[in-house]
Structure formats: structure tokens, C-alpha cells
Image 1: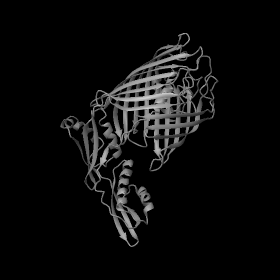
Image 2 (image 1 turned 135 degrees about the vertical axis):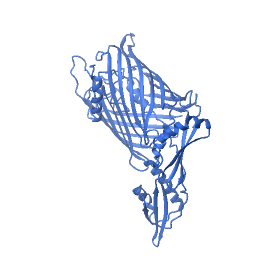
Image 3 (image 1 turned 90 degrees about the horizontal axis):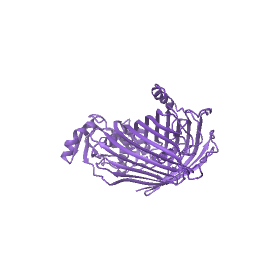
Image 4 (image 1 turned 90 degrees about the vertical axis):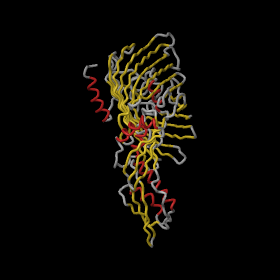
Amino acid sequence: MKPHTLQRITLITALQVAMGLAWAQTPAPPKDNVQQGIEQSIQQLPKSKAKPLANIDVLGLDKAESIDRLSGIEIQSPFLQDEIQKYWAASLGKRVSAEELQNFNGWLFDASRRLGFLSYAQTDVKKSDGGSTLVVKIFRPKINAVRVIANDANLLQRYGALITQRFEQDFKVNMPVDTLGLDQRLDSASYDLPIELDATIRAVGPELIDLVVSINAAPTRLGKVLDSVVQLNSYGLKQYGVPQVMGSLVIGGHEPKASLSLVAQKSQGIQYGRTEYESALEGSQTRWRIWGAGSNSRNILGGQATSLGYSGELGVGITRIHDGLRDFVFKQHVELSARRGHSTLESTGQQTSRVHDNQFRVRITADNEKLTRDASRAEFTYILGNYSYLFNQLQMETGPYAKIELNLRDQKSWNQEGSIYSLFKFKGQLTSARLDSYNQMSLGGIGGVRAYTSVDGTGDDGAVASLELNRRLSNGIVVGGFYDAGLIKLKNPALGTEALKKYYLQALGVQLSGSYQRALYSLTLAKGLGGYSTWTSYNIESTPNNWRLVGALTYLF
């Protein structure tokens, strides 16, 4: 790689990914590429969400009087006017009970909280011969003071000043109460500390509140099972076995914020496992982690050319909360890893390939996934790697390389209940050199163009995007449709061969998902569109314009 390549790649990738551009070409699907499928399957496992942490006093809103006949609505506020008119539209000309007015106050709390700023209503009734007009005045109270309290004096002495400092960055006197930011701050302010936080918004006047933050000791979790999931799915490949069993287990560690995470996947031809231990560095808003992962693979179709593959990785990393903006939290991740992989012929034991790969990764993330229904996430990763040893990798070179990745995800509700929502996903990467299958990108798979598999559309530079529109029915079942499309390109084609032109994969599909008690289920049917220009008969997993049906059954313990 030329000396200035690392500087150029950052600018070029930022421009090209931002414009949604990529190039594509692909050889026959690599028989030893199992990592793409493993990673996509793991990403489909469900993740828990935190509930809002801030409690809100009723502010005297339990006082209300009934209305004999509601003739109109008068709103003395610029906030939520359309929403309030729609709320009462069906009640015009009818009697309104005191309980219905109290329910309105509760609805206004929820509506304003979703918008992110605490508001409450004061209602009066103007009576006339033709009925009564409901007068609604909305208050958006401001902060009078931020107070930190604790039942344990030692906790207050040790952490009180630090928690006050972290909250006063965003919650200052005479500011309105940002409820989205409050829940995020309650979660992130104790990220590195052996404590838990909750808060109460307490009225001290008509338009003033105190923000009272309570410190509690985090419970000891050593050896306690915190989360566990088992899944049976059909995301696998024919050459390794389509049915797969996956499992995830999280166990409490030596201090309250420490945890041991175990992930495993098993199919007929693949065994994969990953272990990660994470713990907090107190007072630094940082956590450290170490991990190890390994996989064994065997082509179950047999024959003298059957190969056995192995890959193992060890790594260390730190994650630091850099900042927050409303319900978004910004994190910096720095990682070092070393990976060793090789393959051999099953019949003779002869080694057919070997890769030694070391990486330094910097990842920046911004997301509100933990607390928000309409969650968004942006992830930018810069990777510096070095192939220290290569055997029988004729299209690759030993030495340094660089890679940039961008991942985006955004969910948006289209009605107040959130029962109709869209989901947009994007992932792309740009590299400085031809990479091995572990570091390449795949267009296909359950996380990409869903009519194809994780060995379809593999390459070095590429991008794939998905757009979904879903409807949650009254019985909890979710139905929807989607469109997936992506482009891919390989670097440095084999010597003596002509570079293939760019090509794309795309698909349309429908999906269904739901739950019963602690069980989740999903079914996806997709149809490829526009062909598969580099498909060859060596590809046993897919055909051009492929149909693909996959499903998953998950149990949460």
C-alpha cells in the first residue's frame, strides 16, 4: 500500500458512502467464508430495552370536574394544538366525566414526554346555554433546582458531587425539563459506577420543578444469570447445514457493572463460540473488555475436496461515553485484536490456506436504542490492519491495510400508537486492498438482501440498504414488506483475468413476526429482482432472482 493511501481512504470513503455509491464484482462464493453468516445471525438475537427511569409527581392534576355537554375546545398554548383537538374530536356534543378529564391529563403527560419536554395541562370550563367549552392551558415548567439524595450517607459523600456535575451539564436552573435527555442521563451517568439512579420531577410551584436524583447501591450480581436466549433458525447455508441453534447467556461479574457474555452457534457443519468479559473503570465513564472467539467448519456435502476450517480471535477494548444529546448517547470504542485462521483438506490433512491478521479499530457510535421506541443508530468504524502471514492467498499481499465502515439504522412511527412504522438500514465499507473473506462484506443474508445468502455478493467495497414498512396488529403480530438492494466490488482481480464490472443484488419481500409469552417467532419470504450477473454453477446456495424463505423461533429465559 502506498504511503499516502491511509490518508486518502478516509476522504474517499466519506464521500462515496455518503453518496450511497459502491462497485461490485464477485467470484464463486468462498467455501470457507462462515464469519459473515455467523455475525448476521448473532445480530438478529433480541436485545433488552430499559424502561424510562424518571418518575413524575401528579402536580395536582387529580382535580377535575365533569362537563354536561362539550361544545368546544379552547387551547391557550402553542404546544400540541392539533393533537389536543384530535383527542377531543369524538367527544364534542357529549358528556365528559371527571375521570375522562383526568385521563386527558395523563395522555398529555405521555404525549409531551414522547416529544421530549415535560408539559402538563390546567383545565377550566366555560359554561353557556349551548354547552361548555373546555379551556386548556399548557404549562412547560422549568427547573428550580437539581438535588442529589441518597439513603446511604457514604454513597452520597462518594458520588454525590460527581453525579451533580454530570447532570448539571444538561439540566440547568430555568431550563425546561428534557424528559428524553433525563432518561438517557440517568442511564449513562452511572455507566462506570457501582450505583443505580432514579429521579423524581417534583412540583414546587405552578411552573417550577425540582429534579431530585436518588443514588442507590447497585446490587451484587456475581454469578447471577442476567439474560439468556435460545434460538432455532434456518439462516444457515446448504454446505454447512441450513438449521442452526444459537444461544446467548449473560452472567454477573465481580463488581456490579461487570458481566460475562457467552454466545454459541451450532449447525451440522459449524461450531462457533465467543466469550467476553466487561467491567467498569470507576470515575472515567469507561468500561474495558476482553474477548475470545473461535469457530470450526466442515463442508457437509462431502467429496475429496472437503475442507476443514478454523478461525480464532483474541481482543481487548475500551468503551467510553463521550457525550449525550437529548436521548442520544455518543460512545467511543477502541479495540486491538489478533486473529489466526487456516483450512486443511479433510482427506489428507494438507494445509490449503492460512491467515494471520492483526487489527486496531476505532468506532464511534450515536444511538438512542436503549430507551426510545423509534430508535436510531449511527456507527462509524476506522480499521487499521496488518496481514503478518499469508499462505495460498494469491490475490492478497502481506502488510498493512485500512478499512472504513458505516452502519445506519432508523425507525419511525407513522401514527400515535406506533402500530405503523418504517425501518431503514444501511451498511457500507471501503477498503485499501483485497481482503480475506473474514474482512470482506456480503450483500446477502438475513441482514442484507434477504433473497440471497451470506456468501452471495461478497467483496471488498460495497453498500447495502433496506427499507421496511410494518404494521402491528391488535393481537401483537407484526406484518410488513421490504425492499433490499446493494452493490459490491472486489479489489485486485486475479492476475491474467479481466476485472468484472460492478453489479448489484436486490429483492422484494414480506415478513411476519410475533410473540407468545416468552417465545418469539419470525418468518421472512423474499424474491430476488434484476438478476445476478456474476452467478456461476459453482454457487449451490442461490440462483439468479432467487426465492428464499427463512424463519426463527426464539425463547427468552
